[in-house]
Image 1 (tube, rainbow, N blue to C red):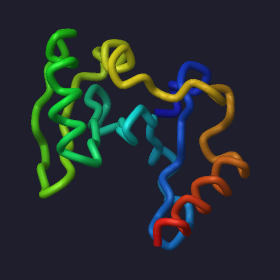
Image 2: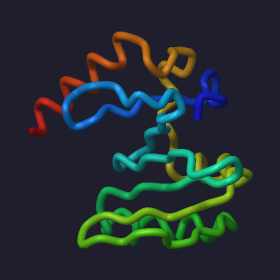
Image 3: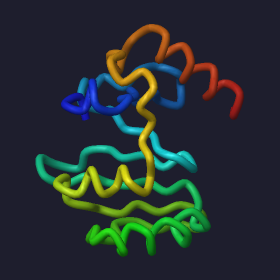
Length: 123
């Protein structure tokens, strides 16, 4: 997702212990309703929905835009769908990725501190 720095705000993955993921490419885009977009492989992205209510609201809107989603994982309250990277701008039209701070590097100190605080509040 590092190629999207300057277009969208790119966030680093923070492990449950509060440390940064050792994988440099382990980053994601954040959209409304805490929807996360992360890289699956060279041409495929994954869309992580934190709640199935969000899926029920957003999925029809994405399908109207012509986005082809393939269910990858579904749990009791969350789900992950695969999507072609070429559809990222269609995803943005519906999910509205965060843009404020788009020029900030994913692993900047301010970003990491903010994410660590949000993790400590939820634990």
